[in-house]
Image (cartoon, rainbow, N blue to C red; front, side, top):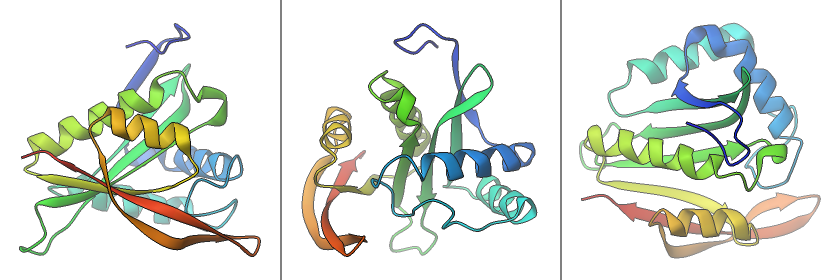
Length: 174
């Protein structure tokens, strides 16, 4: 699989051996924009704690964490957090982040396709996500993948004393 830039691009399931690289990626991507629910150095986690998180996700029936790499560098990360309670275990929450230097290369779209394929093959019937209303490129990408805006969280983000709304978007798979 290649990105629009024709660099070799690979998406795969994260392993415990990736823990340190995942943390490095998170620290980098969190400082590149205010589109994520966390800022730089907010996710204070040790490598061992990250290994435990990855192990728990990989042992879950309806959760997954994927990374996409170009030249062995993590450039995109996506996950689905499946829910365990019987009344809501048909749902999953999707999250994705892309390094700024890789925006608009189609990498985010490829990650979403992989996550949707995982959801379909693991009996997840509805995916949901939250995205800043002013993150027009992400909103467009999610709409292109079939997600619909179903609501708005007012004042969802508070960054430097400023409030930002977020769309609630869902994709029905069944």
